[in-house]
Amino acid sequence: MPSRLTSASPASLRDDLQARIHLMQGKRSSERSLPVLPSLSRLLPGGLRPGAAYSIQGSMSLAMALLAGPSRDGSWCGVAGLPDFGVEAAAGFGIALDRLVLVPDPGASWTAVIAAMADVLSVVLARAPERVAPAEAARLGARLRERSSVLLVLGPWPQSEAVLQVNGYEWAGLGQGHGHFNRQELELEVALRGSSRRASVDLADSGPVDLTRHRMGA
Image 1 (cartoon, rainbow, N blue to C red):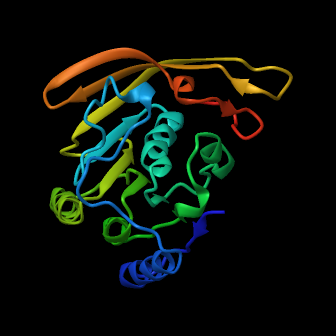
Image 2 (cartoon, rainbow, N blue to C red):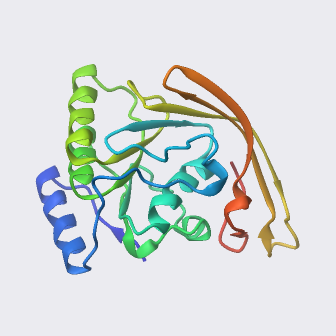
């Protein structure tokens, strides 16, 4: 099961994470790019760049798929500000729950908590706050680069490495409430370094998602 932490001071949160990961002998990579699932490699051929932030718009399934690549590769991941994050759905994507840290409520010090998580974890997924000051975003970006961590933001985020927009989706393979998706096709547009690409991406190409674990939705 994932580690679930209540909101605390950023310093104590960081110390708690470091202690837990050290106890479980987790190891984070700080040099190489983090892998993505094969179904996403055409649109993100270099993987997830350490020190970068990515904006995800329109799909929680896409967010989970982006977490799944590093998690399957052995990275520790975190999720912040998403109290309804479905851990069973995450497991269906192949996210390792024993290397997943949940902070349902980062509280008022959103950027400080995310920075504390990024100090320790390779990838952090968080819902974008209603507003963030440019100076705060810049400080968080500097921390990501210093620690070679990746930030995945649900919603708009300034100075993103890429913006991934889902314009439509289609599911197939549903039986009588059980079985596996054999097609999870997303109409995806990726704006990356000044260029834009569009493609239909089938997340099921990277392995079936267990329907007994996954709740229907984008």
